[in-house]
Length: 191
Image (cartoon, rainbow, N blue to C red; front, side, top):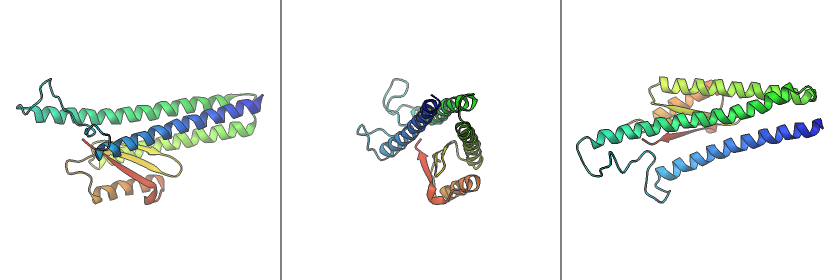
């Protein structure tokens, strides 16, 4: 019976990690597809076509567009953080149940505790990277870490991210995570 429970816990963890990877992959493809106009409907991430119920070039429309784009971008970052936290909370709950199971083998308990510690370390590192990137003057950032890579979505500056900007961000991630530059992917969120 304990082998079945252990296998169920491992399967659930793999399922949650798989869902998180799929969501990350899906978002990355959505960004690259929309920024290159590849989604077929001609929209760009954050682009609006109708402001205040009136199309056209009315006075003040540019201001309303930029406010809408800023709220769309900040909405993405809040949503991404929420999705990441919900996936992590679900996995953490399963790991805590496995660690607290009195009938579980010691190796299962040890593996669950190690996974909890790893998850906590990733959470702290992600928060630190996000805070450091925003402290460097970038509007917002969301970071996704795993054992072998780091993916960051950074809000675009008015001129876009330059090579210098990318180098600064990569250096922050390298110092915090110890990952090499080739393991770090930076995606510019379009306004």
